[in-house]
Length: 462
Image (cartoon, rainbow, N blue to C red; front, side, top):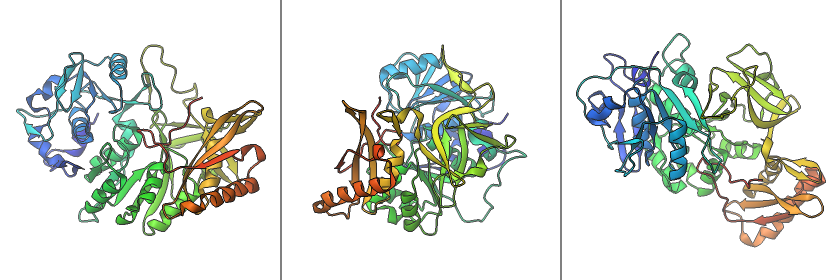
């Protein structure tokens, strides 16, 4: 058993790395002589702890301190309502909550962390194999609680015989950053990569304008950065993406279409541009860096690798050591099938030796009994040189039950006066490459599209 603290602070070593946000930065080395909990740290031993801080930096420090000490840590996102937080606390059997400002909560018992480590009496030691609990997004009720371990989350980054090589001493420095919140699966992956390789991590801040975040990232010399495709479309629209000179650009969380991949390659010609597939339940499955949308057919099948993929009933299914073990809570459904595979619910289609993502199983639009996956139509719209992003959705129809409509955001350089011409060009393009039932019946040019707290397009429910 190894904890996050053991991995970053082996005996006699100095901890490298740290966290930077709008308020400043803190080095992980400060934890060798102190704690953000002060002398209250030991009282959290063997407890189920909600991490419910407002700022990411406090959560980032708390995770290093609590793994191996607490029985369970639950990463709560700041958008949870009080009722949702109570539901999560009950499902996780929490008896403590970590916050970064005074609170009147009495259940679970609140612990206030400081912005910087303060004096700690005694030494730390690993006691337990801590359970890590992540929350699913996209629900108005109590989120599902997904149970992981440090091993299932960090994989080969942990010290051991199967570990990935750490950067060589004196090699070119890495500086990580992510648009994601680290309390969500996509952001947590980047957090663990940074912490376990001793690299600094530049954190985003809630409500921070995209251009301001990119300016901070550039000033910090960020070399590796990740986000959803929607994050990257906003970054390109902001005009501030050109401030960066990354060596690695990563996309995950949504379908990465060819137009966006081409735009990122043109903006960052020296960078490796990769799009990854991962989910809170299935873990990280793969990343693709050949510059093309979708993934090679060769990734699927075999059934004897570290990550096994199969396509069944049109959806991608994953089995690996990166899978979560189960859902928490009374009446929680099984996370995996009897064969150990997790059904991701993501539809894929094999075309010319390559699988392409078509959208979520639950996101299909039914037009007179014919299926339309919004992401397929969006890929066509986004390929137009004057389009930055789009959202395809259903509108009720008394004849077909539903028709396809599209909201389109143009590049900043597009002239508003030409909007009607663009719409006609887009409709003509759709008619050329899509069946008639997939062509939008209505299209409007909009100034922006709303994103969820996880950085994905807000899609209508139902």
